[in-house]
Amino acid sequence: MQKISFDLGSVGLNSIKRAAYKYTDRCSVDLRIVDNEGVCIFNFKEQLSDQEFEKFMIEFRNEVLDEELRAEIFSKTEPIRNLILAHAFSNANLEEND
Image (cartoon, rainbow, N blue to C red; front, side):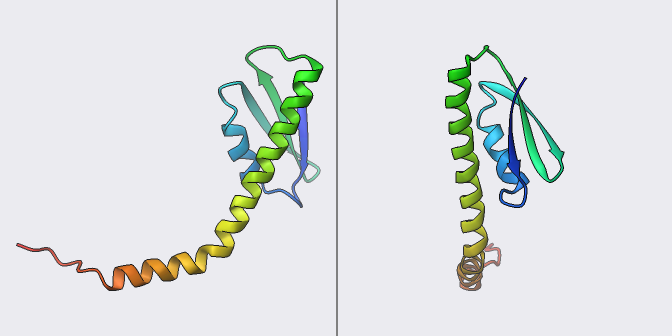
């Protein structure tokens, strides 16, 4: 059983889930929360050597970081997106034309 742990004080659970989803072609991921850590337990479709798992671990950690940064950017830009949408819909003619 091969696993990776993440401190949930630094990384959001949704970021881990999103990253795990991207690897469903290669493995399934069981996610457990243990002592404020997100523990990913991997079940690979094909057995990996230790070296291959180390490479995978680096790739997976980078994907979690990418997802975490995407979530942060989404959160920080939300007010601007809402303003743009409000402006766009305020100028739209929403009445049905016969």
